[in-house]
Length: 137
Image (tube, rainbow, N blue to C red):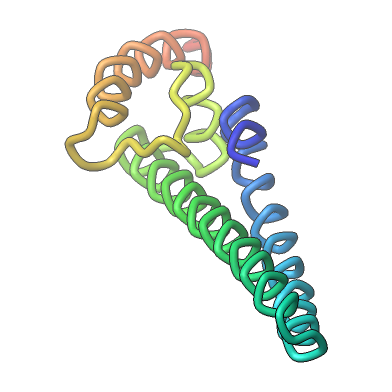
């Protein structure tokens, strides 16, 4: 799931994370009763099945946390760009794509992704303003 978020556009990442979160939550709801039922139905084997079910739930939970963080990063990054460059949220997503910045990696704070975005975005914004500005008559 993480690859699908990072491989496409920022607008696509936003939608992918929302879809992925819904899918993971549904899988967790389905997996929990199966693990409990299997553990209750069998004595020695039940514990082993329960452990496998718990591992599955742990993996789903970790994936869900990652997707929630990705969604938060894209939302915060787009909001920051929209405010900084005076554009809409959709314009902010397009600007990040133009600068080849993956908002899911996070652009706020002091991490490496934020530093790289800080270098790429102003240059892209200047380039965009030249061709996106209305012509003066």
